[in-house]
Image 1 (cartoon, rainbow, N blue to C red):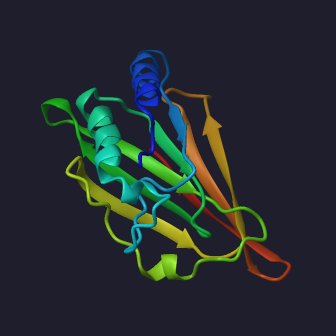
Image 2 (image 1 turned 60 degrees about the vertical axis):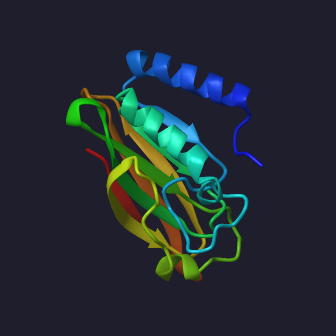
Length: 172
C-alpha cells in the first residue's frame, strides 16, 4: 500500500527542484485531497498515507518550494484550503489546495461539517477557506500581467435547480 512508487517519488522531487528555480507557480494534480482531511481515513486518500503526505509537505518546506497549488477531486464536494509550512530559516511556505467535483456526482454533505486540520508536523498553520457540497465545477484563473502571477480559484455551484452561483479564493 502506497500512494507513489519510489520511481514516482524520485521524478516528482526532481521536477519540483527544477521547477522551483524556473517557474513561479507549480500545479500538482492529485486524485484525492492532500490538505482536506475527513475523520475517516478512506484508503484512497492521502490522509490514509500520512508518512507519504508528510514526505511531500516536508520536502516542499525543506527546499523552500513556493507557489505550489494542489488541484484535487473525489470528495463529492468542493473546497479551498491553504497551509503554511515550516520552511528553511523560519520562513513560512504557503501552499493551497483547490478541489472540485465531477458533474452529476452525489454531493457529500458530511464533508461540510466533519473535517479536521491535517495531521502533519510540516504544517505550521492551516486555514479552511470554504466548502461547497453541491453540484459544482472549478476554474483556476492565472493572471501573468504583473509579477508575481496571481491565482484565483472560482468554484461555480448549483444553488438550486437552474440557479448557479460562484465562490472565489483569491491568492496573494
